[in-house]
Length: 188
Image 1: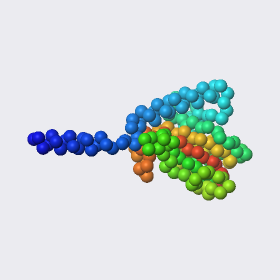
Image 2: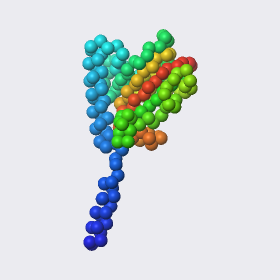
Image 3: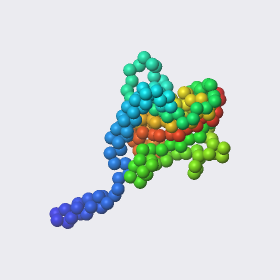
């Protein structure tokens, strides 16, 4: 019995040496989203037109929705385009996606990007996607963008990968996603 107790304590001490990458991740993401949503509402109310709260693409204006049924965008650059893609269109974009800061990534883990190093639209190669095949947060943003727009897009986990790990397993459950997206072009 003494050997069993010693083994238990040894196993516990080994586990305590591990550093958790995403401690309290769900709470951290939900709190971040709540604060971002409230501060964005204040910026909009104060007349800052560079911030927008956009309802999920498939929800009508008369529906009663929650804060996490929206995306938040910060317009970095307004393009010259006058039309927006449809959900059935293909798009060409520059993008980078990252998570909130974590233990090893104080600036947020970059989980995907269409460029390496510093972004330069003159030398970076845009990527093509079918709008309808993307997560709801991306769909919502893209159908509201115009060619040449560059947006920071904040996606709550409900409109991202939800409560389960992404298919690539690099995005933990309950992750708020932050994207830097430039819409280069779109077509049917």
